[in-house]
Every structure is written in C-alpha cells, then in structure tokens.
Image 1 (cartoon, one colour):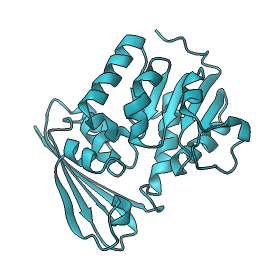
Image 2 (cartoon, one colour):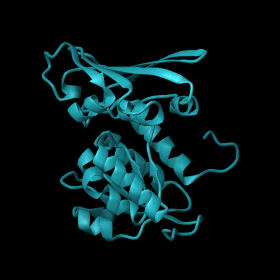
Image 3 (cartoon, one colour):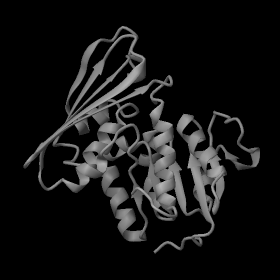
Length: 258
C-alpha cells in the first residue's frame, strides 16, 4: 500500500501544460492543503507558473514523491508511464483513450490492485457518467456521436460527414487525442466493444458536440452537450470540468456533489 501524505497537505504533480493543465494549476494554486510539486511542461512554457515548478524530463517527474499525478497531455504518457506512476501514487488521466488498448488497461488495473492506488477517469466534456455507471446492469445499448470541425479531429478543414462509425475501442484507436469522451462513456457503461461510436466532421463548426443515446430495461436517455471550441481538441467546458474533477478527487467540505 502506498503511503500518502496527510489529508491536510497533499502533494500534486501535473503532466501537461496545455489549456487543461494550466486551468488545473490555477485552481490548485488557490486551494488550501495542496502543494504543487511540479508541472511537466515539455516544450510548452506555461505563463504564471514559477520556474522552480517546471520540469522538462519525465524521469524527474517520476522520481518526485507525490500523492496524485494529473495527466493532461497525450495518451502516450498513460501507455508508457501509467503503471509506474500508479506504483507510487494515484493517477487522474485525461487521455483516457489510452485504456482502449487492452494491454494498457490491464497494466493499470494490475498496478492499482498491487499498490493500492487509484486511476481516476474524468468526465471531461460530457455529463451523466454516474448514471451510466449506476445503471450498467440494466442498460442494453449505448451510442455516442461526436461532431467537430475537421481540424479539431486532426483532419483537413474541408472534411465533411461521418468519418468514423464502429466500436468505441476502434474510435479511440483511430482518434486517440479527440474522443476521450467516448472512452469515458465506455468505461462508465458497457465497455469499449459494446459502446457504439460515430464521429462526424462539419466544416467551419465552432462548437464541439456530443450526443449520447442510452437504452435499457425501463429507461431511455438522450444527452446532448455542446461546448465552444477553444482551438485544438478542447472545448470551453472541458477545463472547467477538469477543475471540478480534481476538486472532487481531493475532497471537500460541507454539502458535496459526488
């Protein structure tokens, strides 16, 4: 079992210095009982982060003694270093498409079981994952459609129409940086192979949309989420949801939404 710091002072490491990583840093910097140990930034130099906290080498980050690592970078971090991180600390992975690779998912589950640590799957840009998880035994069908501009999918500006239809596992392997929502829905619900994914490109689209349809014994849900694009792969809601996820992981006081 990993030894964690006292609840009054938790050490956090952040991997990734993009919009999500920086939003999380700003929130943690104002939070009592939290010490930010490092931000692994690579080539990106985040504004407002003290130079003493910035690392550029993964080996240095892995050597730090922290309670929680927050990954907000790329799936390769989870593939290559997830199990090593979980050997020492909890891990919140925003690049959860990495778990669509069965060897990676098994390695993470084994590391958690061996070391008594936890891997947190954030809800990211979508809602109602708690409902999917709670209703898993009676849910029979889950489908998710994502609509983004071509560049937000790593495609050309003129890309149009359905660019993918298949299982969530195949979607995550095809668009590893663009469909983390599909991975989160699959992990909460019926799994990567039974969740149906569809990805649609719409030229000039300024929002990122996710449509989730759920059917089961005595239930039918339709969930529609739209978020203004921030450029790249993230929508305007995602950084705010990321901050909320981290706050819930660290715990709170009073009446708390779990």
